[in-house]
Image (cartoon, rainbow, N blue to C red; front, side):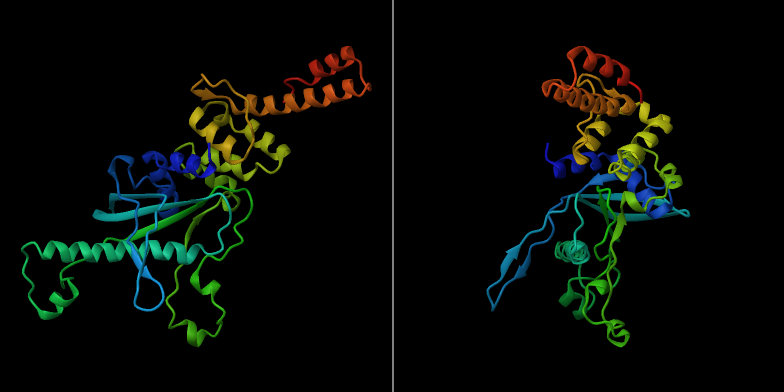
Length: 296
C-alpha cells in the first residue's frame, strides 16, 4: 500500500481526526467530538494562473476536510478543519496551506453571493458589488499538517521565514501565515497521554523508529502496545517500513511480539549465512537460534 494513501486512510477516521485537533487546539481536552464531524469536498477552488490575459485553471486537492460544530465556553463554534499528511519534510508548506485556506474563504464568499442571488435582496450598492453582505460572517478555517516521520521538521513554519527580506519595517506590512504542525519528534513523552486514540501509539512508534534499541524499550514499557488494532499496526509498519510480523487474520496485534518477529528473522538470516559460508554447522546454528529466540 502506498504510504500517502495509508496515512490518509488512517486519519480520515473521525475519532482519530478529532483526536489530532483536540491535541492541537485544546491540549487534549475532548472538545471536538467525532460525531460532530461532517465530511466536506476536498477539492479546493480553481484559481486562475498564467501569463497575459489567458487564465490557466488550477485545482488543489486537500488530503482531508471536515466541518465541525464545537461547544466552547458555552458558545457554539462552527469550524472547517483540514489535515495535510506528510511523509517527508515539505519546504514550501506555508504557502501551500495558505492557498488551501484562502480558497476555502473565497468559496464561502462565493456561496454567500449565490445564496443572496436566490431571493435575498441587497440593502446597498456596496453589498451588491461584493456579493457579501454586512451581516455575513465567515467560518474559521484551520489546517493541520501531520508529519509522519521520525526526523525533526527542518522546513519553514511561516511565510516570514521564507522571505529574503528581514527588515522588520517591511515585514510588518507583510501578513504572516504560520502552519499548524504535529510532528512526533517534538512531542514530549508525557504529552502522548493527551491523545485519546491509538494515534498516540502510532506517533510514539514513529518517533523512536530510527533507533531499534529505543523502540524496543518504549514498546516493552508501554502496556498499550501489547494490544493494538491491526489498523494501527498496518499503518506504522508501512510508514516506517518496519515489516512487522503478525498474523493477517488477527484484529488485535501485540507489538512486542511483532517487533521480536523482525529480530528473530534477522538472527535466522545471519545464522543461515554463517552456515552457508562454512563458519557454523547446522546443529550449532540451530542451538544459537533457540538461545536467542523470543528474548525481548
